[in-house]
Length: 288
Image 1: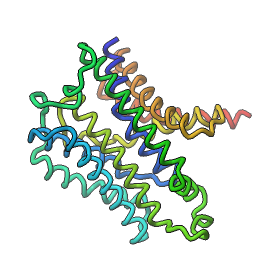
Image 2: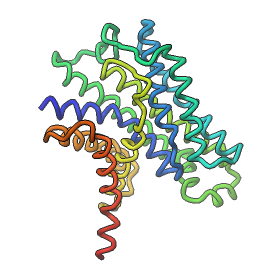
Image 3: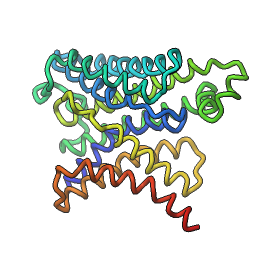
Image 4: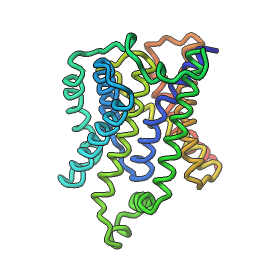
């Protein structure tokens, strides 16, 4: 039970990544690889500040700003230098590796003897269930915030930009600015996941973000599959499904480990699982 509870907690920690990729991939149709770097950036900033005994109230805003700036740089490279968005993300992600290492000062920062978010809020005695309450509260706040933004006038403009840039541009909207802000917002959410996961696992590591983009992508694909199957148009339900996709993704990996699969094959299992989710709807369409 604790094994699957841990997977559930990890899924909630990674919901920020899923929501960030949902914005970049589904709203703007931009495959943003900055995620690998901005996730680690969130963890690096968190580890560095907490190890210097700064309070959570200061750490979280700094993490959000740092992740947002990473996305902004990707947006600027893409829009102002007219570089392919995929390559723009790769360039920023590559540069962030050195930046993250400089922030940390070493490859790993343990946080076992420092006060974390989960130490600051005690609702019940059991640590795992207490963490679940904290993460559910944070996840709810993220969904409410993103839903409110996407349903606002600015959010509607963001969504329209992803659907038809030419139409929005014809209305006099600055497309480049919309994309830059959107990518900044998406990577700020990703950095929040790094902030949460670092405190949940009790350390931050320079390699913690390697391949993390596929976790977020898989979560969004799972959610998108259910959204299409059930013909869901509600933004609120879509955001909830994205978070549930992140949880389901982690539960599947936990099940894989629980049945005795070699942990060295976990990345391969992850890739095959995402491939199966992507392929399933297309196979059904072929049969019809």
